[in-house]
Length: 476
Image 1 (spheres, one colour):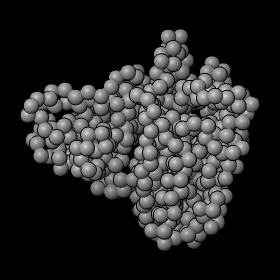
Image 2 (tube, one colour):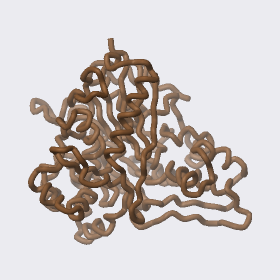
Image 3 (tube, helix red, strand yellow):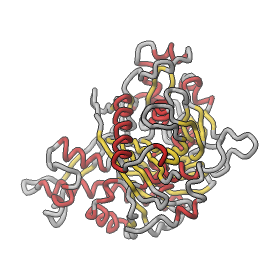
Image 4 (cartoon, one colour):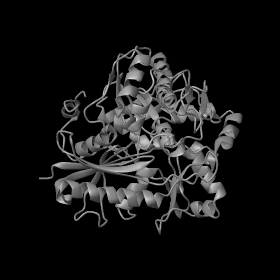
């Protein structure tokens, strides 16, 4: 009997493969970073082929580390960095350009043009999102307008668009399947979160050919089986969700009013609002949290079966500020070094850091903001800067937390946390002190991958229901 679920966690700076057992515990994990490309100021790109190669490698390593084969795996779940945009040739499977990453700011002027045409209400009412270069739509428009021949090839039906989930499924199935899930679709600025369909009015407005877009599925169903030599037998791909949606599911925030904050490359707080797509009055996003019921294509029942919405506050730079300390300044050698460095001082010494490397997200939505440091004196040390970086992450979360409480009308009594930076005890203590509520870190910190595993496992009967999953959540 297959006793494991394989989760593919494709993030902004690294790819992971994690094998989970029936208790939701990690059996094996492999992780590898990949290239970050900055061709111009404010531009961020990935090589989609490199992402696939790295993801394939960590799959092999995780299975080797666990000493298992495909016969031990019941299903595959996928979670991914959201909004990052890939366009590839349907026949050859080759990307026509580097992937444009969610952090990329090259389309800010185009977004300003849309705002000047008073289109913000239209987009927010249909998609739940704020007009910003963060989302996939303007990135896709840029590729259509700026890469030679792409517009004509797209109109001829030769090209496919997808976020990273679509790209991985396409590669895992040998190019047979072009799908996305409802959570990732809801982050493109092209998807109507009320009708659960690609919005024809928006597609016409942005001049995006409908033929480029993937079929939208639920987050928990069998999409296809693998057809590549990575595995010695076909495996069902059965779960898929954007990273923040998967993390919320992995934290078992199944009920309205439950939420979490993920400290990864960015920082993302998500609050489950149940079946209600609640419009924010405080610059948060309304998004599909997940759909774990019947597939969207099931015409026999309601499209809304198993559908949950969420309010989300997106902070663009969190753990990436620590990466900057390591790679940009050379102030630390490893991510884990920042805690010891920050603890060399009693406080920030009057130094404050604004980590706006890619603009400011919620609740400001300032596309042109950039990082800044204030309060430096001759007595400022690396320790003060390290502490200011950690505090900068926590201060951003406080702003989102306050906006979320105002939107939902209730006082949030706790914050469940996850993500790589949540391992930092000092950061979590700073966060609890600033919020004034308990910060709860689970024993399994890889909740993004765990959520993808849960969605896949539910689809194939590996776990019977969500009540079983609730019992897996244990406090660290």
